[in-house]
Length: 94
Image 1 (cartoon, rainbow, N blue to C red):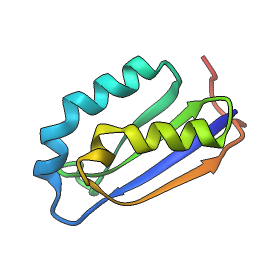
Image 2 (tube, helix red, strand yellow; image 1 turned 60 degrees about the horizontal axis):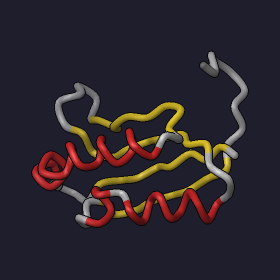
Image 3 (cartoon, rainbow, N blue to C red; image 1 turned 180 degrees about the horizontal axis):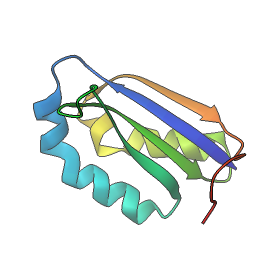
């Protein structure tokens, strides 16, 4: 089942994000469920300020557990996280 994870960073948390970025990327790379993902940025792309991932997991509980164990979340980077069931409609699936 697909879920979209929308995570918003706390204000002025770029240093915290950068300090945990390698662990975050490794975690999701090893999870083996990410279909697409990347950071939100400001308009000129100079500052990352959130994350969006679409993941394919068994159910909401699995999605929430992955979010809970994300190194960014464990480090306290996020002001808010949202887990939403998602249906793929447009764009390549591979």
